[in-house]
Amino acid sequence: MNYEYSGYLRSILDAPDVTTRDQLDHVLFGREDLAKWRTHDMPSDKEWQRVPAQRMPTEHGVRIIGKFHEIRQIDNLSVDNPSFWAPLSNIGVTDSRFPIDVEQCPIAEITYRCISDNAFPAWMWAFEGARELEFLPPTPRWHTVARRIGHNGYPSRLDTLAIR
Image 1: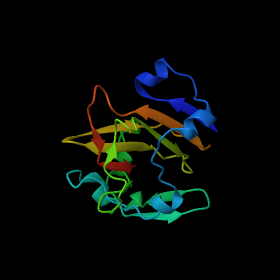
Image 2 (image 1 turned 45 degrees about the vertical axis):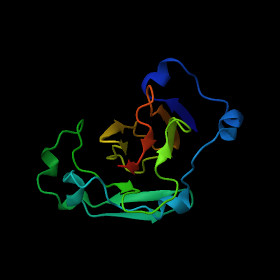
Image 3 (image 1 turned 120 degrees about the vertical axis):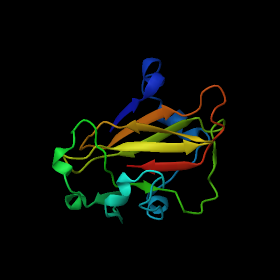
Image 4 (image 1 turned 45 degrees about the horizontal axis):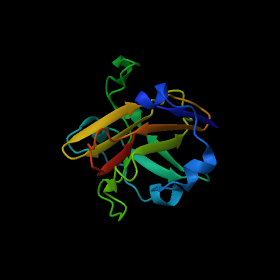
């Protein structure tokens, strides 16, 4: 499986030692957890609301399925700037692990793969009046991306996580 750092971590680190990484404090959302998440995203964003979506547990994770064929004029959209998505998030889900203390767990890591050639994966996290969105490299093979969330004590917590 490929492993890469994102953001400024990319310029200072190589892939981590797996044994050391797995011994650190962490919050893990596995297949069973993700199967309970909802196909909802930030209410202020309208584009996801036009895409009927569902989540489907699989042997290794959760598949996010969006029905994009019902969107008018989707063929006119730029392939470099996808503006409709099918989300999977913890919005509206009660989970005692949220909010996540960013000082204790400053690195977010996601393992994913794309089974569609048209997939443009992204992840979004929301915190204290703001949010961050990062597009992920599309890949048909399992791939892990890690990114530092906090910078100089901000944000102090992560409230929402969405996979798009």
